[in-house]
Image (cartoon, rainbow, N blue to C red):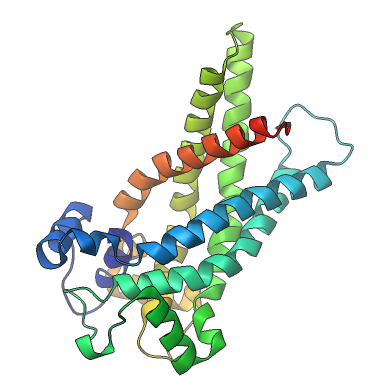
Length: 275
């Protein structure tokens, strides 16, 4: 919630500016109540649940196909990077509509300049009105920014994850550390968490551009993320391109650590070997 609000409000020329994530959260609680913190959560939860399973599934299968007969104990960038970028590109088509609905729901709070008469009553209402007024392509507004964010971001995420995981296993193996399920969980938490931090550190400007593109009331406004970022940079400087960095990074570590631990546990339960 606060990530989208920080990106929207702190890059606009007019309106309220949030000092940080805590200030944004306090404003939401004061003006919208606890319910305001969960605006747009339904579409987000559905999108993330489907996206996560699809992402890891495609990555695993693509990585296995590209690796083929290659035998290597070390992570192979020529396998990891294209596998991760491809899986990210595919899931961007799932994420774009759900994130458009989430963003539009979240920017119409008390501090918004959106008139009450134009606000959506629910995520479904938002999706239907978007399609009705902008056509089917309207629900995919911000698609290029989402595509680039997920392709580049996941290439970074899985590269960091695979290398940190390999390094930790190697170091602990060299120290003759007894292998256990608790040890695997610890490696998953560290490697997944650092991968998540690397993801958002690398592509947050693209996410800022996506938010601006998806929430702009002007249908003729640019959908080119690089043009949007140039406009933000001229208006607010580099700080504007990284709006919401603090809350995003704080959330990235635990969220991605949990995702990786869950994925690795699922593979172990299904008897799938993790190379």
